[in-house]
Image (tube, rainbow, N blue to C red):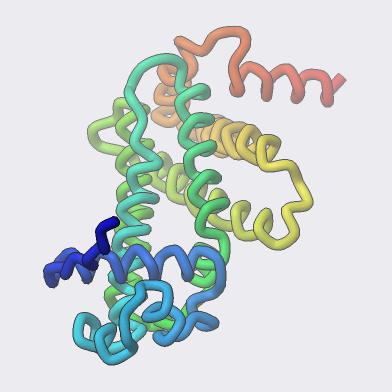
Length: 229
């Protein structure tokens, strides 16, 4: 029988471990409710050693947020293949996967967590929104988005955030229904804008040109026609 020896971690390895531990705890409870002592215990090290790598909980929270924001931004990356409605639905499923995995942390971030007013935190959140915006615009194959398109896409991203927060507060609506609804919301926002703007109308027609009869967008049209009749 041999006795195992705990391997000593390097500085960066230990930092990454602490970030991972903190992110896990922040994902299960609001960051305000998680103490440095809990993080140290979960990491198997002493409280003073946590402060050796991070000056305080805020800096550790921001480091964990950076990792989470990178993860969230990647959820919006989608190959430019197939119908737009199906692509957006896959994006929404990955987005809600993230919200489901990081519920309390996501809620605290969007509603104001321990780093309210932090320039770093605000920049990370804005960075995710910008990455999502650029990704969606790229799917529409528009190199220079007109003002109305930017308004539609950014409004839709804000709507997705608000919808996720409402869903987390009791999960009263099935998640899958909300994922489809958000795809419908994108089409509806774009259609309303296109109804009064020729440039938006051309963009929307091009986006819907390859939509099959069985797609989230076609489903929306069918539902609206049924409602009108």
